[in-house]
Image (cartoon, rainbow, N blue to C red; front, side):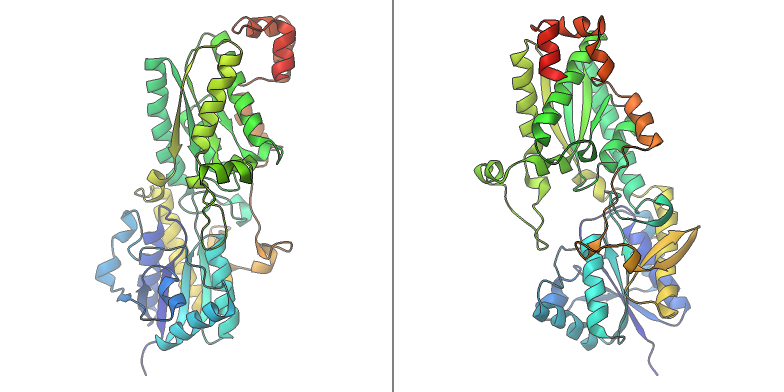
Length: 408
């Protein structure tokens, strides 16, 4: 009797630690008498219905891949459940390969696709998903971070530290836009890790008018910094504030491209340039001369060599995914709870309004956020009382009343 076959694929954007999951899962499968293979390019070839390129995952091939960034199986954003025909092609392709078990490494969308495949396979294929995203926005128990986040924020903090030194040297401000579609966790983590003076995240802003509000927050921070004797700094902004850009604005800039799941490609929205130009104009209105430069931070984080934290974390997830499958789990998300890798009931993680995984956002009422906010340079309520109000107004061409009207 031939060995049962375990297939592994990767969907969505890269995150540090993917290879750790692949390697540990392959080694655990081999120890358990299961033959591991890798499927290239996520769901893409399964969904197309043609030949599916695969690779044998021998122990010698995966023994040290946990030390590397990227994905040895590559990845794609193909949606396997975009319609019933596509979903059936995926299940049929897996059946032709004689796959008995499937591990899908990815975020919200990849997990949704894995769940639909499990439903359609009706027990013939055991399917689990291993969650990854540098955004740290999946509802894992005990506030455990998603794998890749810790490495991404460390690399991002290193970039911002260098920009802080450049800002000091040149007397300018940098506006850094960080990846994070719905959560500001990465932007906030990078800010705190680097000691930057300002973070602006979508959780703290109302849904409407986010762009104008962000421009005011950054402008106010620049003015307050000057009043405190500093003419430089770095502001880190979560890209999720792009939800405040109107469809008309995006259409005019030709930036309404979407991925296969229907999400606007935020990385293609020129949010940094929009904020830069808005802050420059706002500063000019109040008579403040300041060099403002925008910088996107994102793609350079996703394939970084993983930190020891993510190496250990992902190897536990990969081996745990195999053990869960062999124990009969399917349609589950593999997470760490109490230090143990275990299948999590998707029903407890799904948002009933969307049918997708709930989004974990930064809790701005938490002590952790309040402590972070206290380290930032930004206008607060007590800045609009004297004598501080006049000190701030003196940095501009506004009088105290005008400053209060403009920023309070």
